[in-house]
Length: 178
Image 1 (cartoon, rainbow, N blue to C red):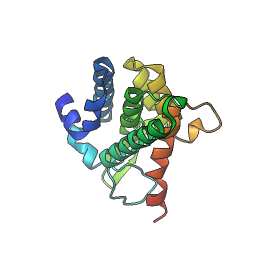
Image 2: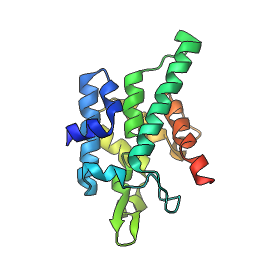
Image 3: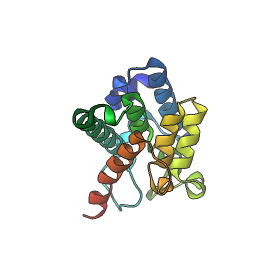
């Protein structure tokens, strides 16, 4: 499944640290297995249940957030140089995994996609951060996943976490408000 995931999420290949790359893939793979999904389901799973009949898939959203975060980080680095230090490996891993908990939060039903019991009890930032910790991802990546949504409001966010947080909402709110 790891080769399928590299093909489906090619941004993972840009992670320079091989250990981080492998752990990112392992986290994504386990989430799919625990959720009862196959790799190709990422093109069918909706990126949110908050937009009825959304046409945007989990994969499209994840890739768009990650690509947007990478572009934002590149521009910030070009403009601010060493004033803002951005760890691109952590940023990419966090972008790819920011919604990994949704693979546990959602389930397929006869009527489409709904919240699983896990999803009713734990929002995806919590289950995603747990999966990341289980796979020994660095605290910096766990942090990005844990604080990317409203659960992180009012608390500390690293530069990478701010970037992924805003990229996520840029990729949600305009679609929600159509």
